[in-house]
Amino acid sequence: MQTQAQPTTNTPLQSPARRVAPGVYIKRLLFVNIVFLGEPGGPWILIDAGMPGYADAILAAAQAIYGPGARPQACVLTHGHYDHIGSLANVLERIWPGLPVFAHPLEQPYLDGTAAYPAPDPTVGGGIMPWVALGFPRGPFDFSANLRPLPADGTVPFAHGWRWVHTPGHAPGHVSLWRAQDRCLVAGDAVVCTRQESAYWVATQRPELNGPPKYWTTDWQAAARSVRTLASLQPATLVSGHGGTLQGPRLGQAFRQLTARFEAEQVPHGGRYAASPVVQSQAGVVYVPPLPLRPYVKLALVLAGGLATLLWLGNNLGAQRPQKQKAPPA
Image (cartoon, rainbow, N blue to C red):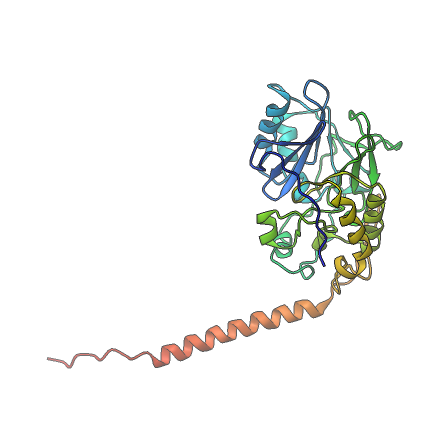
């Protein structure tokens, strides 16, 4: 059973950005969301940087909210996966040079050129998106000139009233942002508001509360703890890295259902990381579970069988095709 919550009824997703709470604006870039935190006329920060090729779209959305010459005080990364930092290099080079970039210390080896993320597991979750993600770069990404650690006291730089919460599992240094005043949660990929494994759901953006994207979650025990941590906050508004915004009285019920059935419905049954997590430290990857051969052998057999069928059909159809008779010599 899937868990659903009440979607917002704000301006359409195709608008430059939409306001979902005081000083909280969300912008969808292809299939991933970025967030602007801060009221117009005051300091503001950028949360994540989306897929590559969207630096100009980020600038246009910022100017629509904050006016010409808009510049954030900082960029805060929920984590460093490719779909959340794809436009960051271009933003730092062309749009806002010198912009400080804050991330959790456990995320920094993947953002300072030291280490690459573990490979995603395309065999879990079903759908085509896990196989698409297999082609995403894993790093190392190098933003060391701009990179800063998030403050150890849990505050979010330049964002009054916001605190960061360590929510590992999908990535070791994944963080979510929380404002207790109005119980607004920016969750990154710790939970997502669509079924991210399905290309159909990604395209339609039907609102539904799910755990983190299965194909790139490498520690399911930590992911379960993180989901329960976020549920205990009892958020009234949820903005995630994928899908629409969820809010209203049904959001609490959706979180309760998600946590109650997390191990049964969200954790993959099989796959590379379901039973044994990746072990990571401030230096990067320490241990990666071995690759399970069964799903890849099955895929190879299916592909080989399909290729053999095509060859057989080609040979037989060619043999049955009537041959043109040559005209007798004059």
